[in-house]
Image (cartoon, rainbow, N blue to C red; front, side):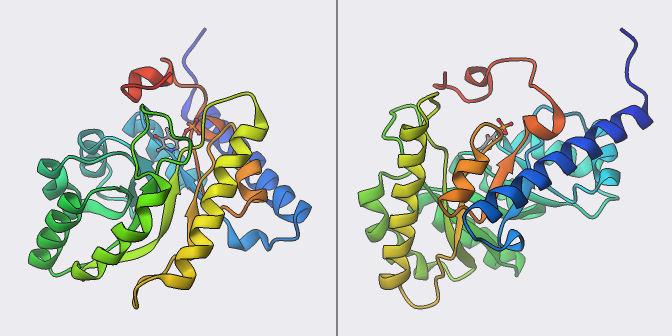
Length: 250
Ligand SMILES: *Cc1c(COP(=O)(O)O)cnc(C)c1O
């Protein structure tokens, strides 16, 4: 098979994007939600910078990456484009300094050590960052994120880090073909978000719920997702199973 030309890749990505966007609209209509209340965050891990340049032309101006090193390299190669980078994967404290240079938001906050380091670096740079608290909604040991019952105490500490603009919660649902179990994760998140909205410390908002990926974003929207993180449905299947990209997964 010959490699796809730039034009073929552009058309493919445009078509995939249009399909995902239409399915988002349909899922919203199904449950009486406003389609504009859902943000599509294209997830670009393992997709080459060359292909992302084409994706940008197709309309992807936000890109989510789960590994700092990969995100950083792409942000440099694509530095001439106006891309908003979102870090959606677990972050070690010693990597925090890299993300404050290029990332617009961080969706996987689950430790106060990282919060403190991030705040310190952001203060030094004179900027803020949107953050989401990652919750382990499935209870699987392999997943990052706080257990749901620990979230309320955790967020009480966040006003100490004034450069973090807390927007809401992020989760990965259980990977299962049993849709009831997947839906249960999303419902758990919505309930938690609703509780936080009532009791959140002043200044923090919990309006956003980042949940849903290529396999389950419509279900997530039915249960209240405001951000869906979609990779493979836009860029095609990743060459290796998820256990390769997410240690402990699969
Ligand atoms: C890879 C990834 C996604 C997207 O998964 P797809 O199956 O490609 O849609 C979403 N969220 C996180 C945290 C990811 O690492």
